[in-house]
Length: 81
Image (cartoon, rainbow, N blue to C red; front, side, top):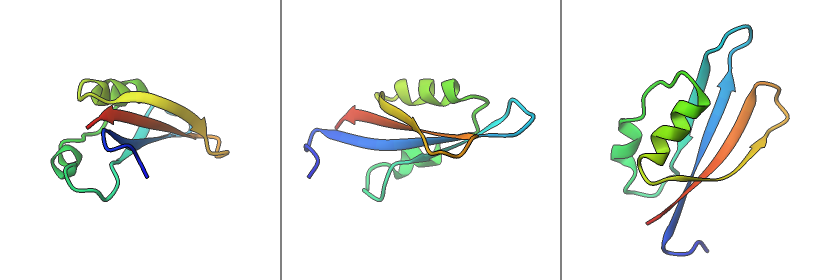
C-alpha cells in the first residue's frame, strides 16, 4: 500500500530512429484526480521537455530505467499529494 501523501506516474519515452523526435506517454494510473492533468499533456520535442513539464506541476524524478528496447526509456515520477 502506498503512503497516502505520495502519488506516482510513469513517463515512457520512445525515440524515433534516424530522427531527433521522441514520443512521450505519461501514465497517471487509473486513480481519479488526474483526468484534467492528462488532458493538458501535449506533444513534447524531447524527454527533458516532458520532465520539465512535470516538474513545474510538482512532480520529481524518482528513478529511470531502460526496458531492453533500444529506443525506449521509462522514468518514474513522484509528488506529494
